[in-house]
Length: 301
Ligand code: ADP
Image 1: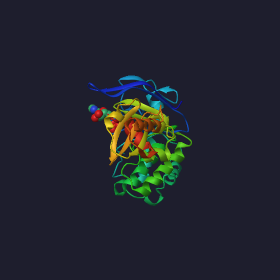
Image 2 (image 1 turned 45 degrees about the vertical axis):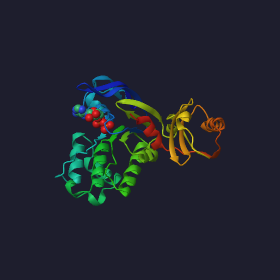
Image 3 (image 1 turned 90 degrees about the horizontal axis):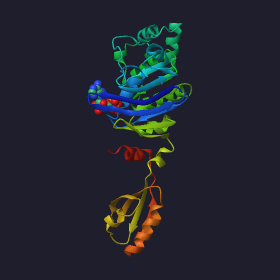
Image 4 (image 1 turned 180 degrees about the horizontal axis):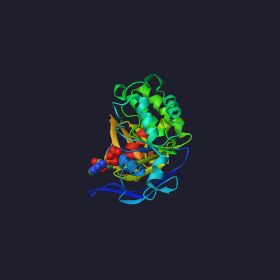
């Protein structure tokens, strides 16, 4: 297992920012770490990369316990922090060479040139970092994260603030890297997960609320939504009170969106409700649910 997190907890004062979470990530996997702001994503990533200590629990990277082997673990991890801290006065090439030196990378000059090509910085390589756009700075950040050929890559909101073209380029790059390495990336953008992640962990208030393949996440939320139109208005509270019905909202005149658990076919229930209430069903259809809906259901507080 490339990343193993067991019963990890982090307190800031009295607040458990991360509360007893456990998960694993395999090699060749892009793992999405999803959650609303303040959920505990950055805190978890900072602990895995050894930047801050855990309060409780165990983290292993490539079989090494991070508190017992901090230096070895750092060599195996590449990290792009949330606010990609770069030396703005340094030149791109100079900076990457400096990072390579810290990691004692052999054939430094050649490796820097390789990285510049991998992340698509050829045109910008002679510029000072402070003169680069946000997208190119993210590329420099990615290059410094992978220059020592780490087995595990931890990326905290790698695409935040990028324009759509830059976004696509960086996502492609992450996907390519993820085919060989283990990539864990945090985001609050649903499309990002759909575009690049094989598996998704959703964290909310410091606790894991889902750990699923991206495809199965929608079922995991255990909600189906049915649109129904009756010939006259109904007492929606009576419908909402039926077993397995979670919520009824008025969509238009005599029309409702009915949320129900997946344990039943909500359409049958609505049909028999209509019969009992002596109203007619004029239209009924299951609504398509997106990953975004599932995320909202799982992280509603
Ligand atoms: P996310 O990355 O999901 O937005 P964070 O891990 O940054 O969440 O934060 C989780 C919680 O911990 C938040 O409530 C945040 O305010 C709190 N927090 C984060 N860092 C610190 C810190 N250094 N001191 C105190 N509280 C912190």
